[in-house]
Length: 283
Picture 1 (tube, rainbow, N blue to C red):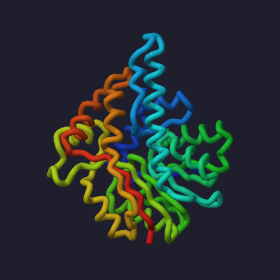
Picture 2: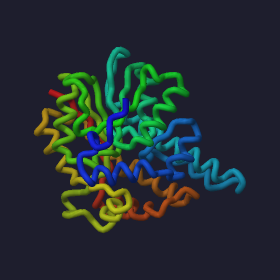
Picture 3: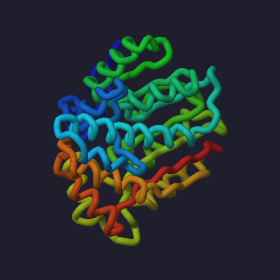
């Protein structure tokens, strides 16, 4: 049964975020998903094949779209690499699961149960339809729940991840819930944009990103302070900033550009914004 919205959305801000993602139909997400049937809601990493900008005009958009999709799939792969060995009998949670792309990749890789949670009822319905079409509805499910208060049993997950969704929540509340849900020794992984504490307050470009996505990008230090407070010990910290800048340069030159590309590139190149992967163990 679907929970009533008032029991899942705890604030006016959460309702506004849910409204945003329920209404979202951005081609940069949907058109990329059509390439392979795996729909992501995050950015890409890696060296692009710049030759997609050349060649026949009539196939350029198709080649650009496929290349951007390849880069975003590479981002999900590196996140899954850092979950470590997950048993087929294990259980994973995708916190802020969007249209389900990373969840399906996790199930394909590990063979385990994957539960996605989101406050967007539209995206939950879309992802569950995808699970049915893929024939994995018995292994990959999506639920309309709040990642800050899921209602799942304590210690019921071997691994949890956030893929570009932590900027919508309070980190202390998030990591308290993740710590509760993880088994001792369980692994947490996040990939996120965060502003550089050394720069000071969020730069103009970071503020533009906040406004565009109605989010609240956290300082880098806040992640480590909140993890330390909730028994999550970082094992790997990787600065993915250099690896994501080429994605944004390619996207800026594509037919799928949304206008936010300049803000991301300015923020990354002036040092006010970082793109981090953090993998932590629950102790």
